[in-house]
Image (cartoon, rainbow, N blue to C red; front, side, top):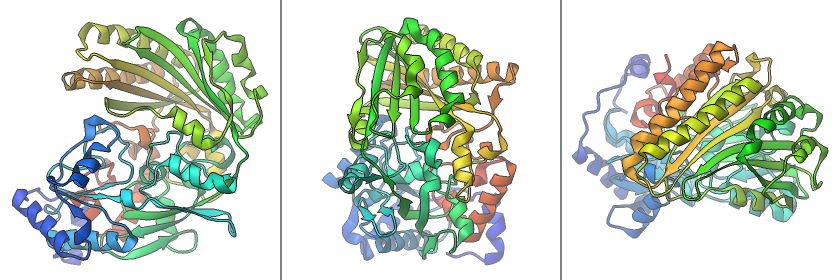
Length: 502
């Protein structure tokens, strides 16, 4: 880097103007091609480049970088980062993105137009270490493959609930799993991170080595470097009971008290988890309620879900099976355009009732204006009890900041998908408006909450700010220490950056 160390603080607070054009990006790609990772660099005319771009889960995010580098080892990542930083010469050139699974649904989070994408998909191994009850999981893996590997040894980890979701982004954003009520957030189960810093240095972060970085990575996302390995605690498993139960929309309001009661009582049986989905499908013109129930013991129809048995269902897919099979079933198909907008509220029946009213209204609005042949509107509501945070606090904590709230919460996710690009503005507007209206109502009845779950956040949201002032200061301090020139603030424009938090 061609900077004087005394400028570090200034660089961190004021982004440099982007003045690099295509020629500069071409020189960045040329430098990579001339380095020891040259064989892993692919260009737009090559099949591997096309496969990488088309493998992003949502069509909304498929940008076209000038080149893609696909490292196969931590040393390759180090070379790639060092080359891009040195070749750039300033934070305004050699801009690059970092991709783990590519499941984020807003463009630019894990890809870049005309810059360089570091695609970690070749680093996808999962290695079980039975001697210390951990597993080494590499960032390019998807959760389905992680579970499939570990279940050969009758263990699993607290990871994502959708099979195609990538390991890296999920864990760095906190991570909610089937096991959260027992073991805390997924990030609370990481015992060591291997990280490539902006200097190219390879470091470990755990409770004894770089402990400040260790804590900051538990929710602090890509503000410090590129994580190239996650060492996680394993959990014994003999299978999971669960699956999706579908009901007619007429039961939606009747189920609200059962959901509230489940959330407030999860501490009585922390093996239970629940995802409630209100889903409208334009192809069938049907609005339905889907409860995804998952109990992390092989026990059929546990008492934790008794209150839901009173509602007649249209289909019941529950059974005892592996975590791998369950997350594969929960996975949504790609190849659509998507938007996610998320919010957090008190576990309050009135908030959920208002959400149901707004959900019906947005369906009617979409019917009037949508041009897509097929579109699906899903409002997902999930328990977010204080028990999740208490479990994490017992193993050193994280930077999510949820310990400052003493009530049980719920998380809402507006998950909309459609097939026609002409509808992009419509569905983004509807999702954001729906969230804003519900948030406004929650504030009126003192049921609002400032936390925003980063893994679901829209690009217009500010999840790091929702961690609270003290945690923002902590993340900023750690980022300045390990990346003093702000490479991961400005040379890597994607993702949520602490430098953008007011």
